[in-house]
Amino acid sequence: MTKALSHQSDHLPYLDVLRIIGTIAVVLIHVCSPLVVAYGTVSAASWWTGHVLDSLSRWAVPVFVMISGAVLLDSKKTSTAVLSQEELTHFFTKRFWRLAVPLFVWTLFFAWYYHVFRGDPLSLDFSLRRIVFDQPYEHLYFLWLLLELAVITPWLKQLIKEIPFSSTVFLAGLFLGISVFWTQLRLLFPFFIPYIGYYLMGYVLKDVALKKSLRNLVSVVTVASAVSIVFGTWLAFTDRVQLDHPLVLYEYTTVFVVVMSLGVFVLVRQICTRSGVREVLFKHSVPLRLLSSLTFGVYLVHPVVIDVLHHGAGISVMAGRNTFLRIVLVMSATLLLSGLLSYGIELVTRRMRRFFTGTRYVLKDPHAQFPSSHKR
Figure 1: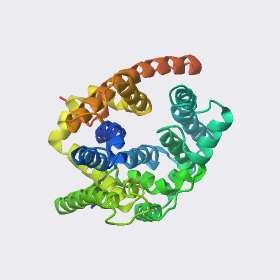
Figure 2: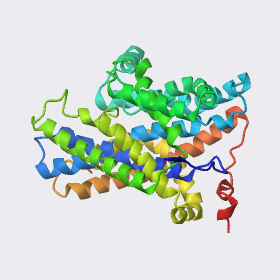
Figure 3: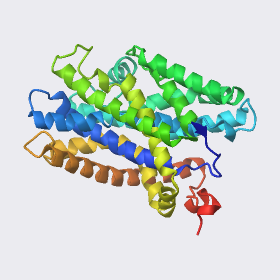
């Protein structure tokens, strides 16, 4: 394993690719999960289809955490070991608008949505108890996770800048080891602790290139981990092995998901930095960055779209044959509709941000984000 040459640009196209395929994987998980939990009430073929696709997508959330670490923990962006008050203020202000505001707005939305369509009480007490002691609405736990990680980010950056890279690697591995044995408490605040390892690994692996022999080993181990999740979960459902619960191997802190997530991150980076692939990404940098910019909105809105397709349009993966085709149909429709909604939300929020902050959003020339050797 060797440290690659530093980039001439802060923008890393492979992170855009990871965001896009990670978003597809998240949607696929939510489309397939009803089939998985319906074991015994759906056909074996339908269950296996949903289960395999769900299992192979379990890297998505850990990789998103790693992407955040790769972007936010870059200590080279600060000139001093100790961040100034101005730098801290700028960082937390940016995180506030990026995470805290959407989290507040979408929590209100899902509180109303659950009340109208699922019968949950619409009260501050119920919402607070659900958030603090149980689980935030739907998938919003991820925004809480990123917000908690953001709080410790400036001090992690300071630590990374002061210690050798090898020590950072050790620290990341240590936290990943802790996460495997971590017993998650049903409390919101310490929720981020088992994800610190992923966060640090995003920084560690951001610029790491693999030699061919090691790349082949990583590929084999990644595939083996995915296969272990598939068959281990099947063995748990059929009571051939006794686990805490049948879906324990789906959890993001289990050793197989940890290994698979690290493997996906490294392998996608390796593929995207090959000269031929890099050239293709450069040629299509505008749509690539546009799609990447929509992934956050797609993540937020897609559960509602899936509900509307199921209950409103009668499009579901649960009914009838051709389960795989149904999954593809629901996933494609969800991605398309969520993408359009995300684009609309982005336009509205951009105008609101401009109104409240007095700043204009300027999209940089994507070609300027690449080394000059790739310009035509």
